Image (cartoon, protein in one colour):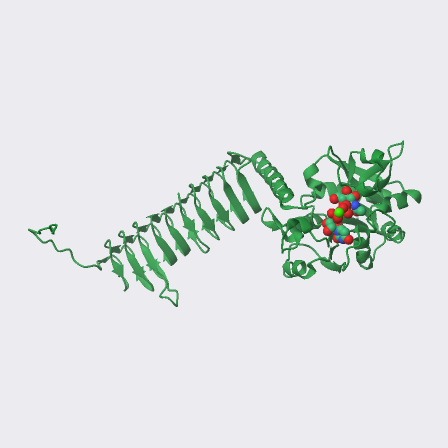
Length: 458
Ligand code: UD1
Ligand code: CA
C-alpha cells in the first residue's frame, strides 16, 4: 500500500497564549509535530505534506535540517478556511490516485502507528475510513452519524448539530484515511453552507455516502491517542499520559521503576535488564543504559551512554557522558559533555567534570573540578583538587598518568602533566610537569613558632 500523509498544522493556537507556534510546543522533549511526523514515518509514508499557515516560517525553519522526519513537503494555507480547505491546498501533491491518503493533525501528538495502520487498511478496502471514539464528553466535537444498520453516513459538527444529534457520544477524532482519487473528488463538492462558514473536511463522509461508498469506521478505546491540544493544561495532561505509557513499557521489559508516576523519558531511551530507576529520574535525548544499573532519586541523564552495573547516586546531573561498566557516580555529581569514565572508576560528591577521561579504577571522590583532562588508570585525585584549565582566554589540558596520586586541595595549572606513579603533596599549586614517580611539593614550608602569644583584647 502506498501511503501519503497530510498533517494539518495551519491553525493559530490562540489558547496557548504563546509567541511560539502551537505544534512546536514540546511533549516529552520534542515538538508535538515531531511526534506526529514520527508516527507517519513508521507507516513508511512516501511523503508527508504539512499544511502550515500561522507562523509558517518558524515551523519550516525548525525542520530545515531534520533528517528523522521522512520526506516532508510544505504546503501553505494562507487563510484558514477550514479543515477541508486545508486538505485542498495539498491536492496538487497527491499525484497517485490509487494511494491512500492519511489525514493527521499537528496538535494530536500521541497517535500510534498501529491505529493508523488499521485505518489505512480499512481505507484500502473501502475507499474511506474514519477514526472515532466513544466518549462521555463529546462537547465541541463532530458527532458520528450512523444509519439504522449502524453504518456511518455522515459527521455533524457541534455547532451545526440538532439537540438530538448532540446526544451522540461517538465523536470524530478528525483522523481519516481516503483513497486519493475519492478524496479529490469529494473535496471538489465541499461548500461553506454551515454554521462556521468553513470548508469542512468532515462533509466528505456524507458526500461519499451519497455516492454509494460504504464508510468504514475504526473505534479507538484510547482517548489520549486522539486527544488534541488546545491549551497548556491539555498539553500537560498528555505529557503525563505519555510518561505513564513509557514507564509501563519499561517496567514490562524488566526495568524496576520505583514509581511509574515519577519518571520522565524525553527522548530515545534503552534500558537493560534488572536496572532500577528511583523517583524523579529524567532521561533526555539519546540515552542507553545497560543491565543492573542503579539510578538514584533526582538524577538527570542527557545524551549519554551508561554501561552495565553502574551506580549513579542521588541528585547527579549527567550530560554527553560515557560511563563504562561498574563505574560509580554521585551523589551530587555533575558530569558535563565529553566526560568518559573507565571501568570501575569513581566520581564522588560535589565533583564537576568536563571533557575529561578517567581510566580504569581511577577515583575523584570529593569536591573537585576536572576539566580538559586525561586521567590514566588507578589514579587517585584527592579532595578539592582543581584543574586550572582556563587562563581567561584559552583552555589548556591536564594529563595525569597511571597510578599517580594527587594530594588534597591541589591546583593543577594547565597545560601540565603529572607522570606515572608520581605523587603531588596536598595543597600544591602545580605549574610544571612532574616526572614519573617523583614527589612534587609546591607550597610554602610549614613554620612552627613556639611560645606564640595570642592577641589580647584591648
Ligand atoms: C475538527 C473536526 C471535528 C472533530 C475535531 C477533532 C472538521 C470540520 N471538524 O474540528 O469533527 O471532532 O476536529 O478535534 O474537520 N486546521 C488547519 N486549517 C484550517 C482549520 C484547521 O490547518 O483551516 C487544523 C488546525 O490547526 C487543527 C486541526 O486542523 O490542527 C483541527 O482544527 P480545529 O479547529 O481544532 O478542529 P475543528 O475544525 O473544530
Ligand atoms: Ca475549531
